[in-house]
Length: 225
Image (cartoon, rainbow, N blue to C red; front, side, top):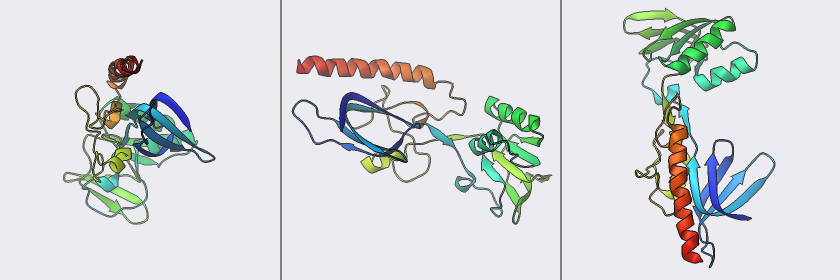
């Protein structure tokens, strides 16, 4: 077990649980169990920052008519396929209008894939074993792959066990204007609070909330001195 003032929970670690630590005379706080493929670690901290980010909304969370054939994926999976030296498909219908979608489009084209850019999520998909086409309005577009790169949703599942979010997908961390969660010593920042596919505000938000946390911990330390 390790003790400290602050624990930062991000996507780079697998966090099994967060719960209130048994109060100790000098160091009440939070108990965090962190797990990897080979080891586990228990942390006790006076404050915890949840920065678990977000995920691209998958097909299962969307109202798109039709079957669920292979060849439908989110942007992060498409990037992993490309990084592995493979092609997601021969003809990709790609949903998204910002820089994230543009970067992925360039990478797909450079890899030899034909890309059909879609400004809106398809109304319907068609195909049995593999995607054959997508429909936007009255128009059917032939494609063997659909990539969703248009919407990030909050990844705050870690807070369900504390009763701070319910079981609905994409529920953001319920912070106040200063980044505090309803339980003392618990904070959240970044895309688990305000999902943004381009991560435009994450760094500045992190700096702002970080200064507030440092001030709060400094006040606690001074009060105990």
